[in-house]
Length: 367
Image 1 (spheres, helix red, strand yellow):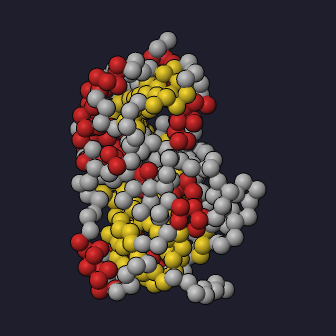
Image 2 (tube, rainbow, N blue to C red):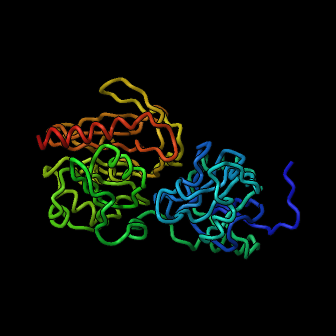
Image 3 (cartoon, helix red, strand yellow):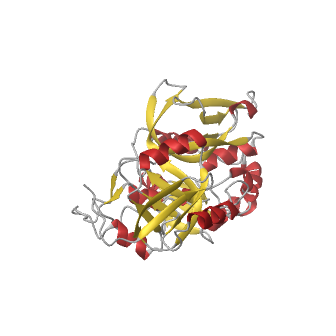
């Protein structure tokens, strides 16, 4: 039984008028965003610090969150990027040999509003039926009519360039030793992508989104990785422009938002999914080998399979839940991409073979 005594009340209000009452944990305040659900069973700290969640209020479907605490090693970026965090029950006790504090204290330190004690099953079913919606979480205002007015007036994600709000400025060196020099175009890159490249003996430079194709090539990369990131890919026009000019120069590997921007650069189109793919249990089939991987995913937009030119692009991966496009490669250029996260963090490691494929492609190109 969950006991809430002398707790600060909080409200979650969706733009369709749905109301969920709960209690505050983390920081007090009011936060707006698009409410989504994530089906991962663990890895909440990695989720909170994933820049791809900028602009979103994240609901976890697993009921008990926070029981193993937080630590300095499990972050995926320099800070949390979720707008707010929604759970059924936040554990006030953190018990793990790696723990350096509680989830609630971590959110409070970074100014992230949390709400617990709501029926996350009902919220998840609502999102699945009606789609992802704008929402507000507040501990400051409990007037439901006022909160509904506020959320309706808040901006949505469509057409917003959220990448510029998460990418860091200036070229940075992740590591200085390695056989091949890989430039990662940072649209909100997760640290585990950089770690996986470094583990494969790559020298990794990180260039901010908005860096021109000429400036990227001036770094003399032997391969380019287009990273994950938040929001609507069609709104990130400077990156799409740069990618068009980079095609055919060196091997390119796109992940998540990077996959979508490659699709746009090749003349394809993207569209918004009803409730996105967020979690660590999505089955994806590699059409080349027949291999099925359980993958980590976090995206609300998708490349339209029918919009790609079949004479230029080969489909390599398909989502087995809804048959959406999960990967493609160019038929003549050293370019390929996937919609899911092969680096996991959190999630299964089934798809890490794709980093091996990228490094092998770079090696063949520069042999």
